[in-house]
Image (cartoon, rainbow, N blue to C red; front, side):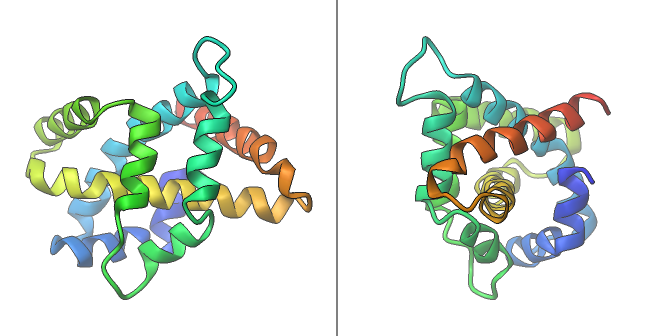
Length: 166
């Protein structure tokens, strides 16, 4: 199952639509356009840069697991507004700067016709949902707490491979 399908089936799309005051079809279109950029950013982050021990997957895993792990998905699905600071932390880790995040939002808005302000609000929510999904998969498959990064790497690899084969 693709990440986009998982988000649809888990209720993330409907929850996000309600929170942003848009219809579920618009949320689905926006998510479909944003997810490749988020997953690609996670892939680049996981590949690391220059062998920095604190960068790469370690930094991404730290942002995901330190940001609440699987609870981030629950936050997106909850009745309260999503606390997007965790999502913004993940976006900072995968994109490196707010300018890149803004560029992604601008391109997706132009591509989909969805208001750029709505796309900017979608980004951290989707980052949290994707990261929360990966964290839940990683922690359900690893008994040792130190195995989270390795499990996240495997899950991220399968998601990136799935996105690239479409």
